[in-house]
Image 1: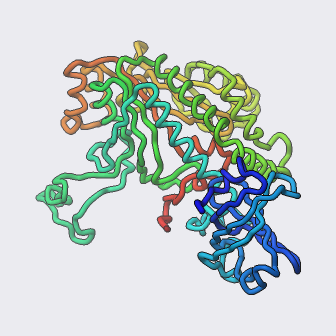
Image 2: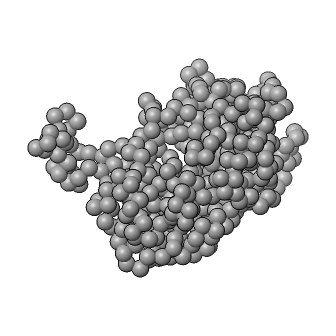
Length: 478
């Protein structure tokens, strides 16, 4: 008999049908005469209830069926007496593929802290919460590729090992085959990278953007979707040392086109989640509600599905950075000294400022544009005022910035001057400057941090809980 996934059985199984299912035990309860086994195979948040007759299978076999044991079960579907599902399975055959010692298995069917589950990240997929999170993560990854493919974008694989620092921040992981102790030195007493594998100093990439621009100025519209790395010693709920980025780059796009694409893209993904992940979203919504039930009402999160609908149903407000600073300085929190960080023109806005704009002032998602050039990267198009650049940040409720992007500086002379001002080596970036020498065009792009977005969609509170194996300072387990 061909195995059916539990999702298929619950969605379309008919009373009287003989089926074979395979999965892991979530819970088992029972009496003298009958055991009830909740079986899950990862295909759905919902378990299939299996009814096992004690006399038929014997106490010895049923004693070996514990949480996380792997089973194959054949039986007949009958109408379920309980609520929540239409059918349950009366077992006729049970095969135990792998036992699980209940005295040693760390994730028993009870409430565990997320910190405890991070310490057991190799097993946390077996919990309802993390199976839901990673099914949603998969769905969002698929939707990203579908969106760009359907719009005629080309998927470009940009390098993971690179010699350039796209952000100019210098917080990079070095890649080297030279010995860590007593590496070869040059005449200046510095490490001689000419003897290294690539013949020069190389790092793990912080962004695929610069290489994405090369593709866009020939193929028109491209996107990257891959791992990026920041050696930033930030032990927060919002930072990872290894994370995934989606970075589209488009030739002949100006700032407005870039904003339109970002809004359409985010709404597409959220709509896809609502249409394809509702069972998991409902479970995570309920989980969040339970977690926050003891908080004062004004400190609770917006209900998860309501929050996703909120983004979907509202046009994003477009506002300049200068206007945003004025709004913040005229706000009650500013006047009453409630903001932790200062508010003045030229600062990099903090999450508290961004969330005030979205959640209190506009009550809509916000796209901020025209940031001071001194707090933005060298490649952003300089505005005519000489003070700002054609940058944009998309701000969401409860999370703040979710997308950062800009129109890129297409003028060769302006770009070189800005690179010199910011100590970006023009001789090493000759290949990047060539796109401005030969057939330059207006072009733009943005970056979406995949884990930040998954945080938003799932309602989880810590970025380490939306990536399978988080890499953070002092942590590279599993």
